[in-house]
Length: 342
Image 1 (tube, one colour):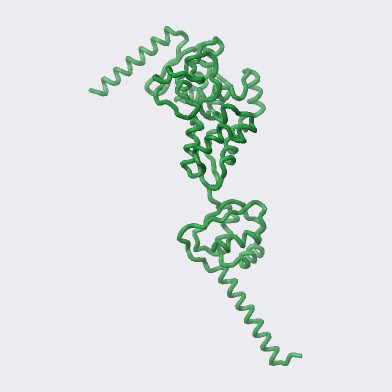
Image 2 (tube, rainbow, N blue to C red):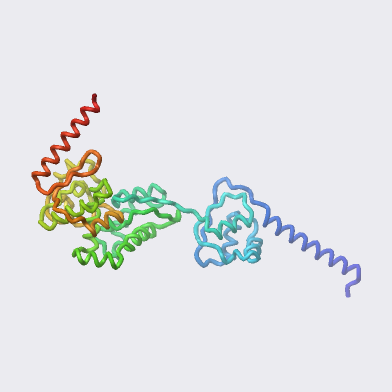
């Protein structure tokens, strides 16, 4: 049996331990860590136990104590609200700050914007420039990777199917994850209504995106897309070569020529100066507006068009009209140049 003195000593010791524990927890909770010389990254997987997350953060020095973090997470109810992702920490934060990041999902993001009309080669340059992938490996996967094979896109690959948009990726995203995001956005466009319209036009998905890619490369003025699409459909109907400069410039290897004039004399399976009909596949990755133009071309009798200096086009129904339009535009361009030189 403890004496009164021993009881007092035990109570005092217990109180001291509790006070010390409270002081330690308070220190771990409310005192910020030191700032790091370089940011420290911690990846949190979906469904990962909070205990393991706490240990990861403590091992990285983001929090001082895994035990204190677990206690805070459970008492505050935030342990069940953590969002998976890749996080970067600069240090100098309290446990409540760290948990705030995890609950809000302030994970690292790499934003990549893919404009309309880029080729696979150019998209590979874009995502490589953002530090996400190796350019050569991305291009190889887009041409003949497992996703491309699974979707039946061989032998030409994913050209035309990488949908132009702004994407947000983890900095640790794999090539397949990047490709999957772009391909998924494309296939969302193929709604039942779109498929019904393709059936009406007797177009396969590859033929649709091929036509859309040519429209994308030809049209500088957005409002002209349906008219340009209509011209190409008219030429297809009459079995006339499309004679589209961008098809002549396109190289499956990604080495596009800068000169349409020289390109039209180059042999290529995509060069529509050499044959009637669509090329074997897309020459770029078109946006939604060009796809819509390919689905709903404007009905006209136009068979030709020539570009003005401002990027718009003069459309003609006959070759004689087309030649006169070319002469008129060249004359106006020359006069404009003469005025500018004065």
